[in-house]
Image 1 (cartoon, rainbow, N blue to C red):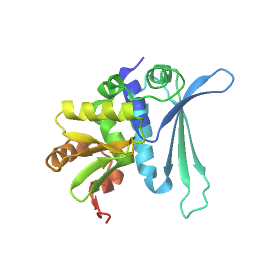
Image 2 (image 1 turned 90 degrees about the vertical axis):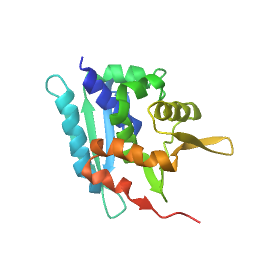
Image 3 (image 1 turned 30 degrees about the horizontal axis):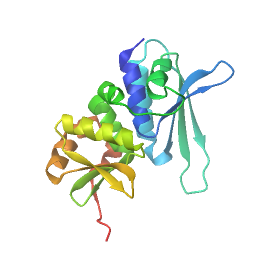
Image 4 (image 1 turned 60 degrees about the vertical axis):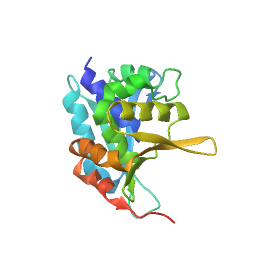
Length: 195
C-alpha cells in the first residue's frame, strides 16, 4: 500500500472529492466532479494520484452535460488502496474529518481544501468547509497548531468554516500557494466585501 496515494486521496476528499463503495463487490471508488473550466486542475489531480499509486491506476474521465454554459467533468478512480482512505474518512459509512486525517494530509490537503472552498474577503482568508462543527473545530485546531491563527465562523449554533486573522492570512497564503494548481490561483484574488 502506498501511504502517499492514500494521503492524496484523502486530500482531494477534503474538498469536492468523495469515496464510495460501489457495485456488487463493494469496491471503493474516488469521484471528483468539476466544471470544465477547471479541467486542467482535474487532470493535475489525476496525474498526482497516478504518480503516487503503486502500479497501474484504473480511472474513467467523462463529461456530464449541464443546463448551464459549461459542462461538468467527472473523474472516477478505482483502486484497492482506497479501502484504507475509506476506512479513515468513512468509519461508519458517513464522512468525518478527524485530526488524524488532517495530520496525514498536511498542508497539501489544506491546499486542496482551499482550492475548493477558500476565499479572500477583503484582506481575510476564509474557508467555508461545509464540515460538521466537530470537523471545523479539528480544522481550526490544526491551523492554529501549525502557526496559522484562525477562529471558527459560527452563526446561530451552526459552524460554517474557519476565518484567519488579518496577520495570519499572508502566512497561510504563502504556505498553500506552492501546492495550489495555477488554474485555482484565482482563490488568491480578494472577493469584494459584501455590505
